[in-house]
Structure formats: C-alpha cells, structure tokens
Image (cartoon, rainbow over the protein chains, first blue to last red):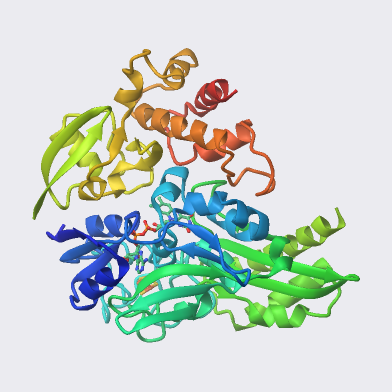
Length: 330
Length: 168
Ligand SMILES: Cc1cc2nc3c(=O)[nH]c(=O)nc-3n(C[C@H](O)[C@H](O)[C@H](O)COP(=O)(O)OP(=O)(O)OC[C@H]3O[C@@H](n4cnc5c(N)ncnc54)[C@H](O)[C@@H]3O)c2cc1C
Ligand code: SF4
C-alpha cells in the first residue's frame, strides 16, 4: 500500500478546499470500500481527508415536506429511521438488503452512492480493466460474464453499479446535494452517474473535490406503498444479480402512478422510464407489468453468460408490482 | 507517515504511534497484542475481525486505526473477562457448543452482542416482514442478522440457538 497522509476535516468547506486543490487527495467516510481498494492497490491516494465527523449525520424533515438525509448517516441508521420506515419503505428495505450488519454500521450515505463496481477484473490489478487503467482493455467482456450489465454498456466496460440504496433512491427521484468549490448544487440521483461510453474511468459527473453533503427525498405520499426485491446467489450477504425498487399507486384497477428502478443490470441504478410510461393508465395486472418490463429490456445487449438477467428482471418486476397491488387489497 | 492515537480497548486507555496505513485490526493484534479479533479474509467478507466501536459492531479490517482515534473498542476478550464474568452470550456459545475450531467465534460473539442491541432497539432487518412492523428474535431474524459472520465448520444452528437464548 502506498503511504498517505491522513487528516480529519474540521468542516465540509475545508474538506472541499483540500481535496479540490490536490489531485492525489480523496475523501474517506466509512472506509468500507476505499480501505479495501487501498489494500488491493485499486486506489493509491497520497492524502486521505476523513469527512465522517464533518458530515451531517442526521435525518430531518424540511419545511416543504421533503426529508433530508445527511451524507454522514450510517446505512443502518437510515434503514431504521422512523421517517424512512414509514414514508419510504423501499429505501429502508434496499438498505437492509445490502452488505452485513457490521458493514451497514460503518457505511455512509455518501460513500454508498460512490462505492465502485465489484467487477472482479476491476478489483484485480493483474488483469486488464479500462475503468481502473484506461486503455488497458476490458477483462470482463470476454471473461467471466455472469455479473455483467445488459443495459447502458459499451465495448469498453460492461460493469454494474453495486449499490442497493441507490436503486431505491433512483426510483424515488431523490436529489443529491453536492458542495463544490464554486458553491452548492443539486443533482438528481439518476443524473449523478454516467454511462461508460469510451471513458469508463469516470463513474459519476462529480469532479475532484466535489463533496456529497446530503440526499433529499421527495414529498410523495403514495410511495408509502413501495418495495425492494433483491435476487442473489445466496439469501443474504451477497450483491444483487437483479434487484427491483418499485412504488405503485392504483386507482380503480388501473395504474395511476408508478416508480420503477433496477439494480444489477446496468452501470448505474437504472430508472425504468420506458416501463413506467408503458404502465400509466393500464390495468394493474401481472401480465401488463411484465410486458412493460420487456419493453424496458428491448434495448438490452446481453452476453453469453448473463442473458438470464433479462427474464429474471422481467419476472421480478412482475412479482414486485403484483405484491404491491395485493398489499393495497389487504 | 505516522500518527499518534489513543484507543480505549476493553476499558484500558492505550496510546500508540501507527503508520497511517494500519487498520484497526492490525493495530489491535500486531501493536497492542489483542489477539481475540481474528484476521480471516481481510476484505470485509467473513466477519472474523468484528469488534464493537462505541457499542456498535463493525469490521476492524476495513477501518483505519487513525480513523478510530479516541474511540472505545470492545473485543471478544473484553466481553469474556468483564467484572461479572463472561458475557451471557459468550456463556451461551459454550452451553450450545456453538463452535468447532473456534476461529470465527470471537467475531461471532461480538457480532451477536451487536445483534442483541439492535433487536432491543427495534432496528429492522431484511427478514423483518414489513419495515414498519415489530422486530422479533425469530430464527429467520437471527440468521439474517448474523449473515456477515461466516463459520467454515458450519456451527450455524448452534450459533442461532445461542443468540436466541439470550435474546429472549
Ligand atoms: C463484503 C461486502 C459486501 C457488500 N455488500 C453490499 C451489498 O450487498 N449492497 C450494497 O449496496 N453494498 C454492499 N457493499 C458495499 C458497501 O455498501 C459500501 O462499501 C459502502 O456503502 C461505502 O460507504 P463508505 O462510507 O464506507 O464509503 P468509503 O469507502 O469511505 O468511500 C467510498 C468512496 O466514496 C467517496 N466518498 C465517501 N463519502 C463521500 C462524500 N460525502 N462525498 C464525496 N465522496 C465521498 C470516497 O472518496 C470513496 O471513493 C458491500 C461491501 C463489502 C465489503
Ligand atoms: S467491465 Fe468495466 S470494470 Fe470490469 S474489467 Fe471491463 S472495464 Fe473494468
């Protein structure tokens, strides 16, 4: 591991200033992804600026009904927060399905959003990877492809984004608050991430020194009826093969409102806009739900090892939305 | 690069100078001679290094020692040698034969003590039927909450029994 300087940020403004001016500096929050990358040689910063103590670690209701989540809130605390459990069950469920109890206690909201892919070639510095080392090639493209994405990929990178929380936040249409040297700005969660194209080394639109300070959850009473389902290789403590975050509003048997986002299938939490548009006004039946999901995957480009993800995602969307219809009936 | 830090380990204040690259796990084992936290995978995947920091369970292999400056750390040894004798959960592990080789046990016990506090506080898990619903110490709940601690001997049924006994 390369030697590095460690400092604790006094406040968010000084943290932004020190990381912005030093290309070798990185923020450190819970450390559950970054410390692993230091050990693996995937990240080699020469200065770590610890922001855990400087970030807001609270959840509060804003005057307009939105809920503000500080970037320093632990994943476990967010999952357990009464406002989140009552108003955004999909978010609480997504968080609880991720990692383990120990990891969720350390992991933060900001760090979770910016965790990097679990692509095995990315994590292994002896194999080619365009995301880790631009221009070196993509080991996953013709290698072990079971985990690869099917939507939004390019010939340069086929990795998925691993976060469960981000899938729920994309479905909710949450807004990320970012502090930059030029001041504060808001970015929707779906707009935070970039598709790989020919520059897969950039996961997000953030620049060196941009600090996530909070995530705002919209005031949407009907997303009380929402759920997260994660399909994986074992029942717990595993990343998603496919996951679905959904919220549904049904009026007289028809879809009045729907929010749908997918995990495990794309380089970013994938908001299923095509499927959502196809659903509004239609009968709320499982066949209609699956048909809409199939429409979303018309753009899919599966490889030989991961074609199973398409029917798996279609079936999971159908099952989750059906369960939400049944919840209403109950 | 080095930094001088203070850790409160199992009730004893310890000051030490560490390379900034040192994890809490390596500081405890290699610098302070606290061998109950075990090194399994060293990448956050097995749970053997679990300790309690400020009463919450975390993985000591994925946190830098410098980031814990000033913190209160409890290891399995601390739980075993408290004033009132071993923690109830440590005793339950012995009574239920909840281990074979014992390598994962200190992490299991620390994690289990964290689980007991989380159940007490009503923190939901992936096994909780509805995020808003009540939390009970069912076998499904305990298995889900303990899933971050692997046991290669497969002592899981006895581990669940030990946690269940103390939780009820
Ligand atoms: C074994 C294992 C299993 C896991 N399973 C899952 C799973 O099933 N689902 C899941 O979603 N996740 C899973 N995770 C990943 C875990 O959720 C992430 O490691 C965690 O959320 C990262 O948060 P952190 O605070 O520890 O981030 P850190 O490791 O501290 O930081 C991660 C990155 O974000 C940057 N950063 C941190 N905070 C900010 C900020 N406020 N502003 C700007 N940049 C910032 C850092 O510079 C770094 O690049 C797993 C991890 C492990 C080790
Ligand atoms: S899929 Fe992306 S992250 Fe994985 S090896 Fe290819 S370029 Fe690297």
